Amino acid sequence: MNIILLGPPGAGKGTQARKLVDEHGMVQLSTGDMLRDARNSGTKMGRVVADVMDRGALVTDEIVIGLIAERLEREPESVVFIFDGFPRTLAQADALGDLLDRMGRTLGVVIEIAVDDEALVARISGRFTCEGCGEVYHDTIKPPVKDGICEECGSTEFSRRADDNEESLRVRLLAYYKQTSPLIGYYHAKHLLKSVDGMADMDTVSAEISRILAEA
Ligand code: AP5
Image (tube, rainbow, N blue to C red; front, side):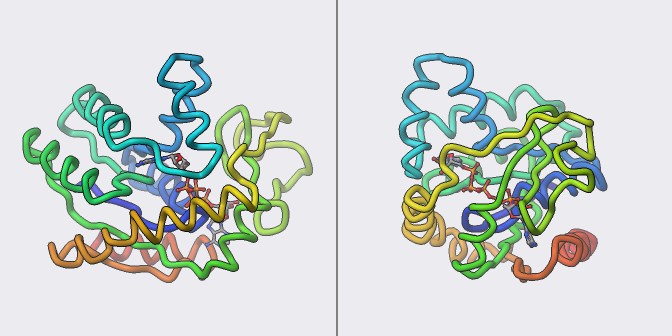
């Protein structure tokens, strides 16, 4: 049963997706990570998306749907996907539905992680990521147990995202409310939507998601 994690920037989609990978053996498909890989690869497409991402705007549906389609076609039928940050527009949601239908795959549940705007600003401005394994930390909410050393892989290299600044976050939030939040109604109408309180601590959110998956 494939699932979508839906929520504004900093809601905890990536954090929860990684927990689902560890605990349920699912495969995380993050369009944000795919696009960051593309920009780091230095391709023409990477150069096009870099500017858009840094501003906090959405990359075109055509590019994002192409990335997802290519990835879905590569994976064996048995793989169960967590879509993290995709779909983000109604056109992307329609395209995902068509892709899954064509491949004989189903969408089991769409989980909305709801978080207040003020909390999002605090989460985004304190976030940093391990360069070795991609584990996500936070200056105050989730610092590594040993200062400067990743708990997962022992790396001492960390980075902060170029779009994790106040100006970009304002654009990202606007894009969420304008282009992505209509998906809440879209999936509600398809009887696929469940909501969790993303203001709770990470383990509580994770337990709630596991409960939803067990009942789905
Ligand atoms: P993307 O990488 O998807 O970023 P985003 O949606 O803005 O979400 P984030 O990764 O910032 O947040 P998250 O919800 O994963 O939170 P996290 O778990 O890290 O997209 C980046 C850009 O790529 C977009 O702006 C766009 O340009 C482009 N893009 C991507 N997909 C696209 C698409 N489909 N179409 C078009 N363009 C696309 O948590 C955040 C912090 O909070 C962490 O420090 C974490 O430790 C902490 N935290 C997590 N959970 C909790 C909790 N419960 N309590 C307290 N702290 C918590």
